Amino acid sequence: MALSIATWNINSVRLRMPLVEHFLKTFSPDILCLQETKCPNDLFPSKPLKALGYEHIVMHGQKGYHGVATVSRLPLTELVERRDYCGVGDARHVSVLFHHRNKSIRLHNFYVPAGGDEPDRLINPKFGHKLDFIEEMKLLHAEAEAGISSILVGDLNIAPLEHDVWSHKQLLRIVSHTPIETEGLIDVMTKGAWVDLMRRKVPAHEKLYTWWSYRSADWVAANKGRRLDHIWSSADLEPHLSNIAVIREARGWERPSDHVPVIAEFDF
Image 1 (cartoon, one colour):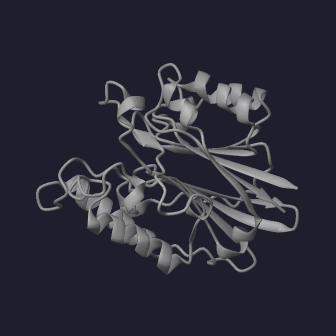
Image 2: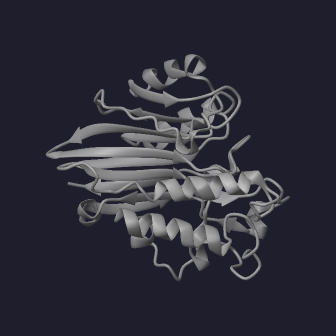
């Protein structure tokens, strides 16, 4: 039986709900994880999602900033976690537990801080916050719960590999691809025994992007992208991965997010 999980930084869920509805009608993932919802829980637009069959919704939101939400056609258990990374009260993480066939799966949904423009924590507190957030993520292990598999998705705001950016050389001092960030995120994967599922289907020597800046007048022609959105899993799920799809066309939809959805498909 197939299972599909999508992740998408929507950059304001209320503003872009028509795009979310279009995506769900077109691609029909079992679960969609949204980031940067910019919406408190009591104002989250649940009604149109439930009308499409996504009746199970778990949110961790705040007014005007950050926010994550996981919407599902599959039942979710009551074992929900909302971790306050760095203890600053930001809504940047939620995890849910669900069952699919003979597996129990913990699904983490993350929105890692962007980190501002200057890659120096001494003059840019936002960058320091990002580094501290990544440091705390190193404690998250894919096999933390006995008998439970894990999937981690979200906008991690770091493009860790050389071909995750349009120019490795030119972006080495640009936030999202600096060595301290990329090494930190790879350390999160290594210490947590996470598998980078996207790079299991698209080899590391091939370019792979999920984000294109609003600043580019013609994002298609420039194609100066970065892979900021990720899908990881515990090792036991890797053999079941059947496909990864980056929905690049979504960047050209009307009033788009600067990120596009990524879908992982599993065959159990």
